[in-house]
Amino acid sequence: MTRFSRMSALAALGALVATGALAADAKPTFESLDKNGDGKISLSEASNNDALFVAFKSLDTNKDGELTRDEFAKYK
Image (cartoon, rainbow, N blue to C red; front, side):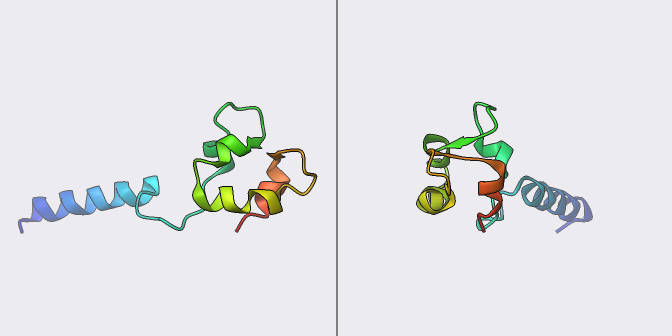
């Protein structure tokens, strides 16, 4: 592998790590899940993340069908 190829491969790996593409177990950000920007995560928005969807009911402590930032903060 040439020096240029190694540098290109390392740059590509760095980009994947930076975007979270390699972090399968990484917790998504509140902002990335709040698709409509209303400051809450609905069950529909949570359905884009399997683990959060499963945990949604237990995280929604006030049982209003939405996660606030505080409720989401308790997500692992």
